[in-house]
Each structure stands twice: as structure tokens, then as C-alpha cells.
Length: 528
Image (tube, rainbow, N blue to C red; front, side, top):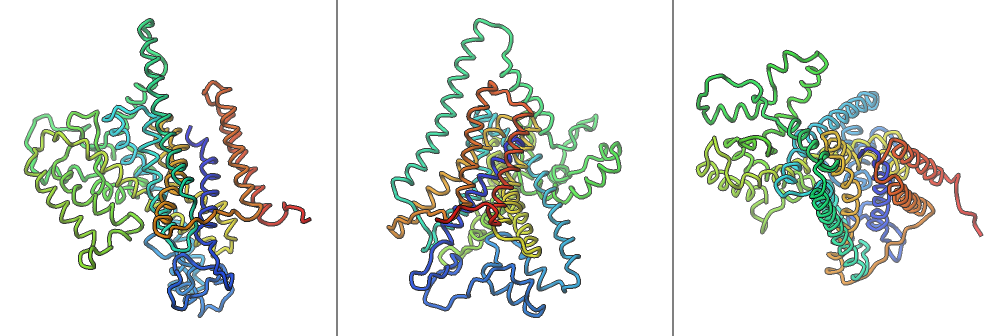
């Protein structure tokens, strides 16, 4: 069901990206009228002029590498690898097809990483949180899942709005943004409580279980069947023996079930070979809590190791490690403090717990695993965006076309994998709620907090001024899609069919065609 809403997420993402770009890079120098790059603020020194990165293909071969390294427009805002520098500085021009082939192969492997992370780590931990806190799927979708999908974008917005040339909004409007999101979440929670209260009252007079409760129980059973990732559960020895700490750790880190390996097809085995490094890395860095198991998936040596590694992964993946390498007082990096604190906590946990019985606060590992897996998904999705942007430069796609197509799809890929996986594992309502809750969280909280920080520093008010017909096309398409859903969903008694999903996909395709025709000047306003 979540796939039917992907076009809505794409349209929302494109609109947010263009509005943010208009806000961040739309500040102009009052005397020259030239754009000022937010990455290189004016500070009394000469700035490197910003030139369209696509012009690199028209330069001499000997000048391309220097152009890529010195031009701010060719620099990525996040990520760990500089793909443009790799193409134009490390590959000769005659090997450009080889470089593109390698990038596409790496892109496909990143899709595999996204799928494994969402299916085996992100969704099980979200299910454990929902079960532990007794949250309905709708509430979990608009809160924890929305936060997991949108938290990295929130930090990006905070960094963008922290630039001295960045536009802001009026203080009252910003509190309105934040208040509107709080009102939205409270409304969902209140409606869920009212619905449960009404259903509880109706059960007093009717013995059969309602379809809604049947759906929940079926989803829980599907979750319990798919969230078991202890690969040794199916085949255990007949005689019990006490495993050593090293044996427990080795079994917990083994992503391969040898008995299953013998039964599977060659295609499954080939795909599993590619998955093994990813699964091993994720098992090492992401804890998974399974409420349906007797031991709740408690592995003392591995979980204690998680207390050191998982927080380290969090600080090194958040904003591509920007916060992790920040030095506190100019002396100690943040990641060193995290390792020391995690080691102390892991030592206390190891000696205060046993291998056979999970500790009372074991459920907290679900939150740690949820956050870590969300940041792994964000890191992989960031690399996807950077690869797509690099391919756009190589094939000389315009920035607007790139933003409407490859970048919009790349920015949505992490959320899409999470929502698709949740829906396939039996949580369609949670994924459905997150499709709306995540975007609302990004827009309201991201813009609200970012502009509040800017106003607190500069005490100025700057307007968002969307320029051109394209922005109005984006806003109009977004409004029409929301109105269409607002009218059609109640008319279908909230029982959505394939026809509804096909209509949304056709609507997105029409929007994309109109937007591209507007960008190329085929559709334009008549000048008066």
C-alpha cells in the first residue's frame, strides 16, 4: 500500500528541495547581484566563483580535475565519497564508460544495502518499540517512523538555515509550524484512542473479533515470523550445553544458516553471497530486539559490544561524520568521548547481566537499533543521491531536470525502502501513516527549528520568495494530489483499491511531464 503514495512523496520532496534551494542559495549580494554560496560565506577573503558543474565536460581533459576540485558547485553537501572527482581525476577520458559502469554497479549494491537494513533491522526494531509502548500502527507511523525517516533531513535543514545569508520566517509563523505538527500528532493519537474506545464498547455486545483486531493479530504473527534473525534457532542440539562467551558472540554474528544454504537455489545463494558482508556489518553495529522470543534476542557479548559500536556509528554517520570529528574544546573529538562512555557502559552491563536472562532494560536496545539502522539507511541513501547527481553531470542534465527526476527519486529511496518493507511485513497502516507523517515532520519541524535558530542569531526576518512558474506548478500539483486523496479516500470508505494507486501514479507522470515542459519553456506565461 505504501508504494501508492511514493508519487506524493516525490512531489513533496521536489517542492521542499526547490524551496530550500531558493532559501539557502537565493541570497544575493546587494552591490553585484551575484549569488553567494552558503558553503563559502563572505568573510573578507576572496571567494571561488561558482560555475555550473556541468561545464566540466566542455573543458580540456587536463583542466577537468582542477575544475572539479575548486568549483563549489561540484562539491556534495554530504556523503563519504567524491564521485565527480573519481570520474574526472582518477579515470582517463577513454575509461569513462568503465567509471559509469562501476558507479551503476555500486548504485545497485546500495539498493541491496537499503533493502537488507530496512527488512532485518529497521522494521523489527520499530515493531519492538511499537509493541513495548503499546502504540497503534498509525501512531507509530506518524511518530517514530516519521522521525526515523526524517531526522537526517532535519539536521540538514538546521545546518542550511544556520548560514548567515540564509532566509528565515517570521517568529510567529515558525511557532505556527511547530505547533501545527504537534497538533497533527495529538490529533492522530486522540482519534486512535477514540476508535479503540468505540471498538471496545462494541465488543461488549458482539463476540466475534472485529476485522481491525484480526488485522492487528495477523500483522503481529507475520512480524513474529519475519523478525526472527537468530539463524541458529531452527536447528539446535538435542542435548543442552553451556556455550562460552566467544561461542555466543560467533553464533550471533553469523549471518548464514548452513542448513538453509543447502536447500536453497543457486540464485538465492548468489544473492546471499552479496548480502553476507552487509548482514555481518549490520549484525555487528545494530542491535535487534524481538519481543516474540523468550530471550527477546538477548546476546550478552554482542549486545555489550553494541553499546560501544552503535553510538560510534551514530556519530560517524550523522551528517557524514561532521559531528563525530568535531573537537570538544579543540582537544578531544566527539567520537573518542562516545567510545569511552560506551566502553564504560558496556563493562557495567556485561558484569551485571547473564547470558540466559535478558536485563530489565533490554527494551532500550530497540531504540538504539532503530536510530542506528535509520542512520545507516540515510548514509546509503545519501550515497545514492550523490551518484545520481554525478551521473547527471556526466550526461549534462539540467539542475531542474535532475532535481525533478534522479535527485527526487534518490532523496525518497531510503523512506521508500522502509515503507515498502513495513507494508510487506504486515504493517501497511504504519507505512501509510509515515508517508504523510514523515513529510509533515520534515517540513514543519525542519523549517520551524531551522528558522528559529537563524532568528535567534541574526534577529532578522527574511521571506521565502518562490520565483518562476515551475514552483507554482509544483505547489499546484501537490495541492491537487492532496485534495484528490482527501475526497477519494473517504468516498471509498478508506478501502483503497488498485485503481486508486494507478490514478496516483498517472497523476505523478502527468505532473512530471508538465513540470519538464515548463522547465524547457514549452509551457510558459504570456508576457504582458
